[in-house]
Length: 415
Image (tube, rainbow, N blue to C red; front, side, top):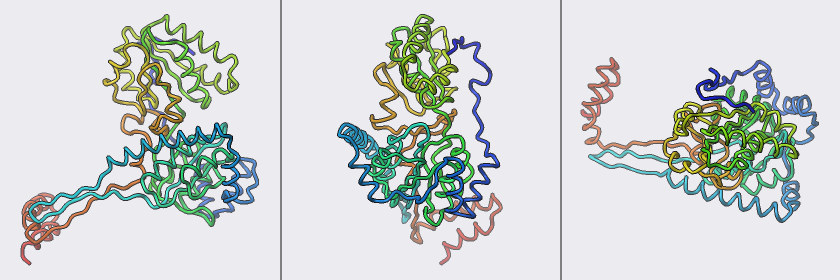
């Protein structure tokens, strides 16, 4: 972990990584498109070292996974599922149908759920039942007709979480081949309308490549946390939160921005102490070694730096957290106050943990029920209503040189 003054930040600190689709990813996708299930088996054997006898998780396996949960885990999953569902339900209430009527003209908005979506749940380093909850539940609340889950080397707890969340079908496939299967459809895996969920760089490349054939939620990169803390903040909390972020992946990014050198030194000591007995330190150490502490003259300088960086997770700790909160605009999710640990957002506070990374929070937010519906409009007009619009449309069409448009509008005034 290195300490840098704000005026000495490297030029690439605010740069955005470009997702480049490699030829190997394109080849796998083409193979899945051409060969279907056969390509999925071949890729899974080559990359995951697994001989897949069957792709889909059977009903008896689902029941075994559910019954195999210990009471503590079952209750934790139920609690998390309920808070995620409650939040999604309130979000759904904001997506409303409406209709306007005036002078023989009816215009309106409909909210239509997608027919079928695919939720990708990573399963490489760790099983991620939380991601099954976070991706499936909003889709269910939105009214999606069929929800499928794809996850590599899927563990019983992830199967149980997907079932509890409401997934209709679960497939034990991952990687580029899973994205291809959901995008194109195979003999076993149905084609979906949209693919959501995080993944590694190959999954992200695959999502970028199939976008347009199907919808996607976002191009998520390695996870990020940026903590803004004044001198009154708790260094133990900050170190714990930075290590929690670093634990995700060797490329995860943990940043502390503070106006206190004393706090910075205390966080460095705490991070070293807490890392010593961490069971996941082999991965965490790789990430925390390139973590950054940014020193500013005054904590208020954080606002401009954070809004330029646009982090996935933004934590505000210390006495000034509440006062500063309203000034930040670019973040995936905001955590205000020293007791609002980002880890609660990962699991059970309610808002979704699938969030924009790589500075994309400048223009997008996290996964929500809105990702699983289409907001469409409709119009209906009487002859009188058409007549009230015809001249305006005709004049604008004429100015654009679109004479067929002009005639179409004026024709409604003659019959």
